[in-house]
Structure formats: C-alpha cells, structure tokens
Length: 307
Image (cartoon, rainbow, N blue to C red; front, side, top):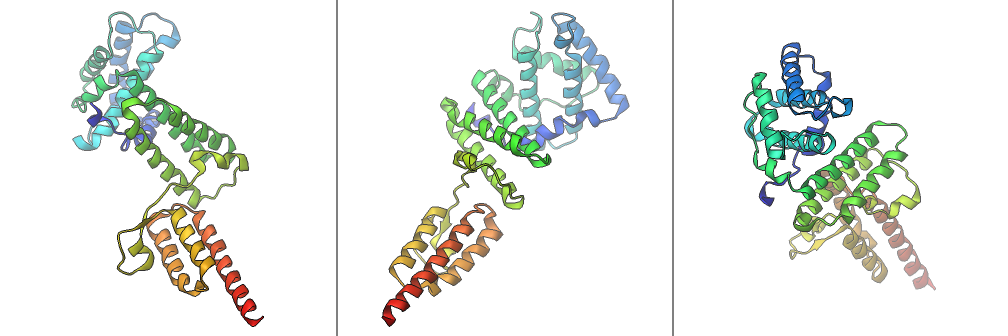
C-alpha cells in the first residue's frame, strides 16, 4: 500500500481549496447537498448534541467534491485523497452511532448521500480509504496539515513570530515521530516543505530570534552542485554541497594567492544559484566573507613579500 502514499499537491493546494468552499454560492447544488446531508445526519449521528452534528461537515465535503468534479481523473486524485483524510477526521472527532462500524462503511454511506444529491463520478483513489484506516498514516497527514496551516498564516499575517514558532514546533514534531515503514516518504515530504519554506524566506526576508536559528527547519536545505557547473569546464563527476563549496573556497584562499582565479567561478555560481535554485540565501553571504578573506590574504602575502 505504500505505493499509493503521496502528498503531491495535497498540501497546501487541496487544503486551500477545502477551506475556501464556504465562499461557493451555487444555490442549486447547495440545496440538494443540504437535504442529503440532513438525512445523513439523521441516519448516522449518535445524538442531537450540536457538536455531534454531521450536517455541516458533510456539506463542506460535498461542496469540495462538487468543486473538483470537472477536473480530469489524474488531477482529481490528490483532491480526493484530501477528502478521505478530512472524512477520517470526521470519524475521529464526531461520535457516530453503531450503524457505522468502520471507516470504509462511512465512506460508502457518504458517497451514496452525495450521489442521491446528483454528485456523481467521485470514485477516485479508493485505495486511500483502506490506507487511511492505518492510525499512523492518519497521524502523519494530520501533522503535515498543521504544518502547512501554520505556514499559510506565516505567509499572510504581519506579526509572523507566532507562526514561525508554530512551524518550527510542527516540523520538529514530525522529525521526532516514529514513522516506521513511512520514514522515507516522510523525509521526502519534509525536504519539500523545507525547500518551500526557504524559497519564501529568500523572497520575504524575516529576522527571527537567534535562538530559533538552531532549529533544523531554519537550516537551509542542501543542494548538490556538480563540478562541471561550478567551473564551466569538463571535470570528473564530483558534487559539492553548499558547505563543500564554501570549504573549497576557503582552502584555496588559505593556501594560494589566486583569489582572482575564483572570482569568475564565484560569479558563475552566484548566477546559477539565483537562476536555478533560489534557495540557500545565506550561502552568498558566506561567499562574500570568503572573498574578503581572499583579498586580505593577498594583501598579507604582498605585504610580507615587500618586507
């Protein structure tokens, strides 16, 4: 079942759409769905307490499915997978009666309610239904849901301190979680989030508390640069991380007086950096400091030669 697990486009794209469905004013479909969801609530809510009412969640999920119904099947998959995750939340936080004794059963019943309201062609990615029965899979989804929600608020609010802290906390929580068979999948998704986070910081500089800089999310993601890209010449297939390139420059500046040799390489790397990666915004500051060291070393060499 691991082959089906992917967050591609789910966070944040599908998440954003789901939380915007209340702005939909298609009166005809909304009335049909309201009637279907009222019946669904009467049939499956365990009692009449307001916090166990299923109508509003059922309606939001139905409007969400209506919004995506005209997308091509492959394009609908991530949206439908997010629907299954939200449906699982319904199971977790609402007290359903004994008529629904499994998540698969709930999925079938709510689909039938939507079909009775005229909402067809929603049988996409059913493999996620049984996968979401795995409690760990649901927890992983929930943690990424919280992470991307906080990142969304970090993007839009003026006072960002609270939400950058929430992002750091959520990111660390995912790292610390025992992910068992899903570890590789989660690490890949964490890397995607970190890249997006630093892309945003590159375009929208944010000065945070120095204490926060020790968090793993605040460390720029590693990129790999080939020696050919660095020098522009034919070279062995050697790769450099950002740390490796910085070390390479420092070693050369320390043992040689050929700082001028590095300048065009540095410029080329900087251009490539801006054009291709737009990550590691801090790396350029390190290169600038490295260049200053080169100039200072050249000056010292010339000064000592005169002596």
